[in-house]
Image 1 (tube, rainbow, N blue to C red):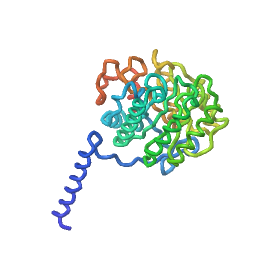
Image 2: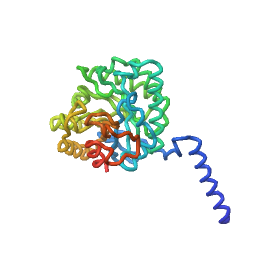
Image 3: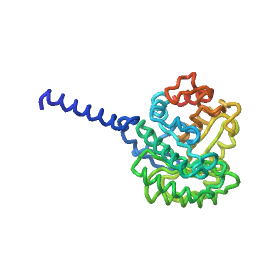
Image 4: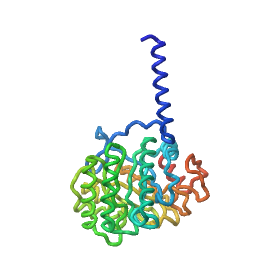
Length: 330
C-alpha cells in the first residue's frame, strides 16, 4: 500500500472513532477493557498474579447526591486525583432507599447504578455496586430484595471485568457473623449463576469491624473478600490489631469505606491516625475507598458545602478532608 493509501485508512479509523463518540452523548469512546482481578491469598491480584491496590472514593447515597454520578467527574478524579476505583453507595433503607421507596424510586436508583457503571467504564475505573445497608442493620431484613437486585446486576454486568459487588455495607445492631454468613451464601450463589468470576465483598459484624470473627469461619468460594471500615477519629490501633489477626488467619480484606473524622462521619479530623492507617494498608496491599463524594455539610464530605460544581474541582473547592485524601492519593 502506498503512502496515500495508508493516510486514507488512518483518516477513516479516526472518523469512525469520532462517529462512535457522537453516537453516545456524554460517554465518548469506551475505555480499554480493564483486566479482571481475582483474589489470591489475602491479596487482590491481576492476571499476572501481581498484587493490585485499588484506591478511590465512594459516592454518598445515590438518592440524595445523584449529581456526582457523571463521566466527567469520574474521568477528572482518575486523571487529577489518581483514583482507580469508584463506589456507588445505594442505600437500602433511609429516605428513598431501594427497599423503602416506591417502584419509581427503585427504577431511578437502578438507572443511577447503570449510569455509574457506564461512566466508570468509560473513564477506565473499577466500580463497586454497594448494597448499602445501615439502619436496617441485619442483612436478612431485605434479603428477598437483595437476591432480586443482585440477580439483575450480575446479569447486566457479567461481561464487565471492572465491576465488583458489595453485598452488605455495614451489618450492625447485633447481627452475628452466623447470620451475615447465611445471607451472604445465598447472595453469592445468586451472583455466581450469572457472573462466575467477579470479586464479591462481604460485610462483617459491628459496622464491618469484626473481621476477626469472619476469619474464624469464612465462606467457601473464590474471589471473596471481607470489608473492614474505619474512621480514624474513632478507630485506632485496636482495630488494626483485629485486621492483622484476620490477615494472619488468611482472610482477604478490602476497605470499601473509610474516613479520618469520627465514626458519625462528622467531628474533628485525626490526620495522624489516618496516616498510620494508610501505612498499614499500603504495607498489606489492602484496597481503600474514601467516604464521600458530596458537598454535605459534614467533615467526611470531600467537597466544601459551598461547592456547587460536579466535576473539575480546584483545591479551593475541597474540604479539609478532601485535600488530605487527594494529597495521599497523589
